[in-house]
Every structure is written in C-alpha cells, then in structure tokens.
Image (cartoon, rainbow, N blue to C red; front, top):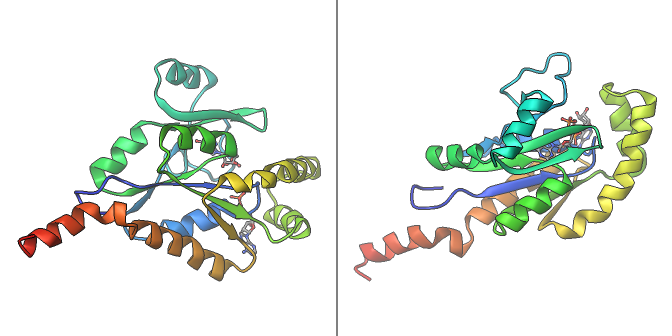
Length: 207
Ligand code: ADP
Ligand code: 5GP
C-alpha cells in the first residue's frame, strides 16, 4: 500500500491442522503485510512467547477488554478459551502503512466481515479428511481425544467455506503458498484499491 491507500484486512480461517499458520507465514512474506496479534485466555504452549503470535491474558483482563469495547471481534473457540482481535491492530497497521493479516475462526471472520465488508476472507481447506488427521497427528501437539474432537469440528467448519471470498486448497505447500501470495497481489491491484495512485498519475498528465 501507499500512504494514500487504506490498509487491507486479510482474514485467514480453516479447520485446525489445515495449515492456516503455515500459510499465514507465507502471506507475511509479502512486503508491507503485518500479523494481527490476537489476545487469548488460552495458556501458552511450550515454546510459545507472548507478543509474537498471541498476547496471553487472564479471563478477567479479557472481560475488561470486552467491556471497554477494545475488540474488533472476539469469540469463544472450541467452547473453551476466548480469542479476540484488538481494534488497536487496525490503528497500528494504518500507522505503519501495512496490510493486516488476521488468523481467526469462522465466528470472528463473520464479525469482521459485518464491520468491514471490504475485508478479504480466505478459507484454507485440507486436501482430505485422511490428510488432515495425519497432519494433526504428525504435528504432535494434541492427544488422541483432542484430535478426534478437532476432526469432528473440522467436518462442521469446512461447510462454511462458501462464506469466504477465496479458497486455498493446501495440498502441495509450495503451490498453496504461491496462491495465497497471489491473492494478496491481485487484491492490491483492484481498481478501487488503486484509485488514489491512479489519480496522482492522471494529475501528472494534467488530467
Ligand atoms: P493450523 O494453523 O491450521 O492449525 P498448521 O499450519 O499448524 O495448521 O499445520 C498443521 C501441520 O501440517 C503442521 O505440522 C504443518 O507443518 C503441516 N503442514 C501444513 N501445510 C502442509 C502441507 N501443504 N503439506 C504437508 N504438511 C503441511
Ligand atoms: P490455537 O489455540 O490453536 O492457536 O487457535 C485456535 C483457534 O482460534 C484457531 O481456529 C484460530 O484461528 C482461532 N483464533 C486465533 N486468534 C483468534 C482471534 O483473535 N479471534 C478469533 N475469533 N479466533 C481466533
């Protein structure tokens, strides 16, 4: 983006294990993008540091932030922990002139689309149920019981993909990565997005 363009908001959702975080990292390789750091009441996993992907907060702090209207969206995910996108992330993106990438669940995506209809929603689909199960197991983060729960939830979540603007099927990582980066490039070239730049160019022709 340039100083005359508002920041774009990219939403990335998909079932657990579909490759959201992996593909968000690919999207963040595109210059002038930044990750929206969510707040969550979930405890950090081993090796996870606050302030990089999440800010870890207590239930009480999260509730205070909700009361003060500090979230662009928030939701209880898997019925267990709360997650939310602070409005402040939008201000930061605007100040730094960067496009903002939100990795959030479907409930959150709906809220953002309601408030910011121009946000670009991208859904990540795994190539199959079998491959999703394999990736969850190989990732080694979850118990068998948790994997079964995530697979059942995935069955429900994947039915929501028609609500999204773009669909990336994460079979071959290199290709899927190129696709998510291509989405960002294409959206940045939309005429409406380029209006201010185009105006400046026309002015240089004294038009
Ligand atoms: P999510 O963020 O959606 O839960 P991750 O990005 O953590 O998913 O990916 C789940 C696991 O699958 C990780 O171990 C990741 O390295 C692996 N993975 C992601 N994309 C691919 C792919 N295209 N092919 C094979 N493994 C993948
Ligand atoms: P995890 O705890 O495995 O990192 O994430 C669990 C789920 O929470 C994922 O589906 C992720 O997309 C979602 N999530 C992460 N941050 C947010 C957020 O700020 N808002 C919402 N609504 N969901 C989030």
